[in-house]
Image (cartoon, rainbow, N blue to C red; front, side, top):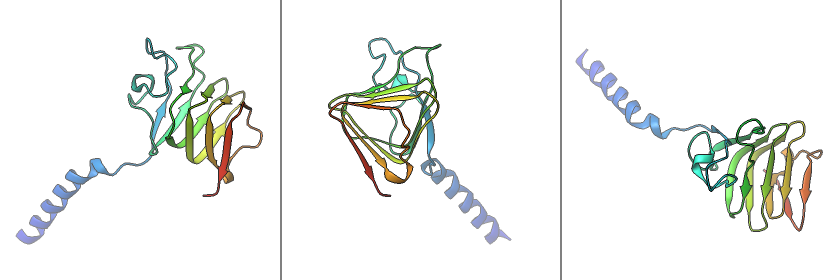
Length: 145
């Protein structure tokens, strides 16, 4: 009996120590409006998780017209997210030197718009052909999974 109790306690300790490192994709929603950084994608305070999205996060850009009224602009290169959802009425701009890679899914609902002047990399199997996408000297690359 003491052996079983010891193994049970050791197992519980192992789980307690390692569970924080086991992360699934998390949702991070755009809020925008941080003073002086209102539209800056790379400002952590503009996000619901208070951190800039990364490859392990699913990003939602909602219609914030009744909130901050400001939509994100990506000015940096090398940004990556697991999934991107652009809700109806929302917008996203990728500036000339900006780039975004979407690993699994890019979805747009209703009147969501993207203006791509930099680079956007999306998986070809999830690229929505009907997406309202404004481009100007942009690179929109579809890659196979």
